[in-house]
Amino acid sequence: MAILKVSRMGHPVLRAKAQAVLPADIKSVRIQQLIDDMFETMAEYSGIGLAAPQVHEGLRIFVAGVRKGPVVTPMTDDVDMPFIAVINPEIVPVRPDIELGWEGCLSIPDIRGKVPRHEEVRVRAYDRTGRRIEFVASGLPARVVQHETDHLDGVLFFDRMTSFETLTFMDEFGRYWKEHSSEDDEDDEE
Ligand SMILES: [Zn+2]
Image (cartoon, helix red, strand yellow):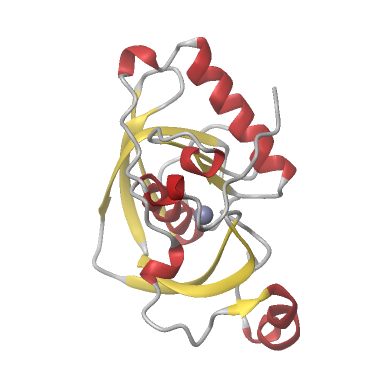
């Protein structure tokens, strides 16, 4: 296991479209090692999501979650998101509803902003054992999977903001925004 270097905004790897992983390669030592290292890197930086381009790997893989346990569906705000490794994800909104919520990004340190996301999405992907998985996510888990899947297409959360009025540094976030926020995920980075 190793803690990997996190790419920061401005590095071209964050703007490139990542390549799909061949299903036959998922169980390879290289991919399994990468997934282990991504989980370790995410934990090191107290993240709740991390996509492969954020560790300089142009592959369609992300890891996410805050606790050990089985993947449940629907994955909601009611329980902490379980650790998942998601490969070649395809995301479709379940309902048209859009929710505005705070996001941060390990590749854009120290900054937060409010980003509109689909409130509920269906995710189809492979898990790290190479099995097809499908789950529904809403609330914060839905926000995380949309943020991470965007990374695989070279999209950063700034790109999704419809207004930059909420863009704030963490220090100012703590001083001027936190008390006005009902979210409990202000310190999470993706
Ligand atoms: Zn991010």
